[in-house]
Amino acid sequence: MSTHETLAARFARCVTLFREPGAREDQKAEFRALLGLLKDAAVSLRAAGGRLEINGIPCEGESLTGLVQRLDLHGIGEIALPAEPPPPQLFELFRALADQPGADDVPSRLAAAGVDRIRVTLTSPESPEPPRPVASSGDVESREAVIPRTSRPTGTDGILRGEPWRDTKSVPIDGV
Image (cartoon, rainbow, N blue to C red; front, side):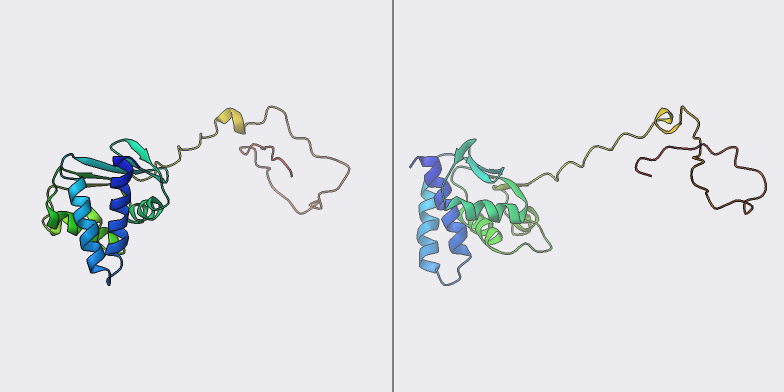
């Protein structure tokens, strides 16, 4: 397993363990192991298209599915960790990821806890569909006069009186 996949697996395991309140010893061991991996280089985790990328390299594994789902649940697109992140700040990140989404998003929650070295970027909202084209006057106007069929009576003989609507144009309607 490459270093990127090891890092992704350890990160995913930490999030999973932080969701289990009775696993304190396992949390500590996994957290320390992850801190050892983050000692030398900055890391960027990105959730894109249902998979995880570490520093732009796609990582695969069954253990990463839960992490990608947690990131999607919180609306997180990217997490940037510096080299040697402060343990209390990384701890706050894992607590925020392990909790259910609340009134505050993860970046706001981390800022309130004093986390300033770890950057969390939310996913951008989906771009709305482009507006449909508006029908032009050429689409609406009838080029030919509408001639009523004489085969069936309309049933309005003698009921309509007065002037016909001369300013209203007929518009063909499909299926009618």
